Length: 124
Image (tube, rainbow, N blue to C red; front, side, top):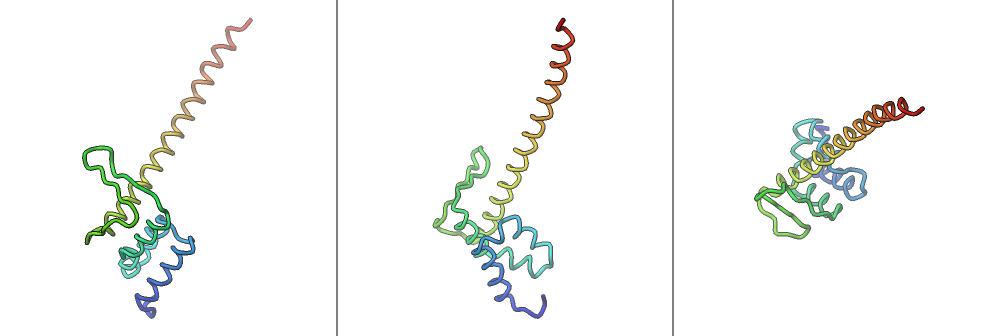
């Protein structure tokens, strides 16, 4: 990895995003490879490319700190961090929704078993 220049790594990651081989989870995982890849994976253009490719609106929180960022909006200096945070929050929300659905299914199965046993035990 050390022999390739940052521009080439940027191009490789950019092509991965463009060809839809990499998504936000992959880009976050690449940050664990080494410090250099972490720095490259945090470049604003990486997250902007992902954002434009996904073409979604992500909102942060439902409180007064509601933030909606759309493709094409004016960028500030720390927008790359904002984009990473939006994707992180999106991932956490999806994970929480999956956990909730799993708990709901476990509770349904448990209640069916309990109430099913009660109903069957009272049938003559």
